[in-house]
Length: 514
Image (cartoon, rainbow, N blue to C red; front, top):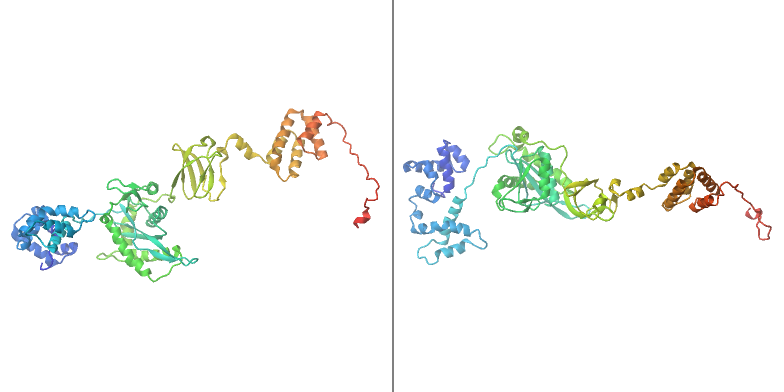
């Protein structure tokens, strides 16, 4: 009691616990004050003859007067003058640029009797502490998961460049068991944050009812006291796992005090032990983190006869919701216009994906993950493709093309040979011969269309003879067959006149080539 006066908020807790029948030793442990101090305050309570319930509802400054009525500080008229203004001064301190020195100068202005600066600050601090009591939160198993990034970073050395690469460290803990998780990632970007959060849920083997995040940009797009705007990627993850997202209030670390404390433990049990180690890639860095994390979770907790892992396995894991059968893949969103060729281009990969031709020129919404690309129009899915990372290439579904384009895609030597066989075997043989002699079959497609059209217009037997004559002559053109039919020469005997070379002095004999 001879030491510093305890905060009246703490004394109220002492009185409340005493009123509930809790012993002096238990009160001492719970409040972190000595047993003798507890005895002294309870001893002061005896001669007061005041109901404890009434004391608990007493203003803390008035309560301090009751316990320290002999103190001249509370008999001073200066305090009576200062007390009504304390709420105003506390509020003013929250404004930019306002300091205690400034408030003290305003307070003492036009006063003959006033507190000196040190005493003014003491009373202001006492009032601040009494106006912000702390609370012991009760956590339920499987209810919450707290997540945050550490302020300090870990590092590894890039083997190719020799550059020291700083990594962010993601920390998560379940408040009921205080079972923790940590992983190093490249940055606090949304994709890295989602990846780390995804890995933490896999590590815990289940899903809590809500995930409590800090107000970092990876989780919250726009901070708000009552309705913060959540990043859509985080909403998607929550929907995939059947949970909810609860951001903390801005500048309110007490909302996630447990994970803040866990960060300190991570500094002590992981960062400190790795301070003299060298790593050359992110994977090896995370292997060591997991090794030390396991030791941390298996370390006996102070004043408890169990470790975090034991409490998690025995009491909490059964209250977590089951993980879905597939892991979450982060979704990305784009608004794109369908080009005249019936495709949209995903700029990230510079790859083209087809859309039904009816939507050419219209705006569509593209939702893509690491493995799939979905395309929507008016909230209806109109196309689905497997993601392809080949730059400048096209992925298309033939059903998305108009009839003319589908027909064009079917064109090939085999297609024309098959169609010719339906007209006549001779035409099929002619077309096969024609493609065998051409290095660029695409140049012959229109000729094939013409021959097929000619075959359908002509008597079957006459057309077959014309095709046979063309094959014998090794002439596979449309005009040659058309002339045969027009001039009616398909039945004439084919005569080939071989004329011997005339004798001439410039004619070389066989001996020349020996």
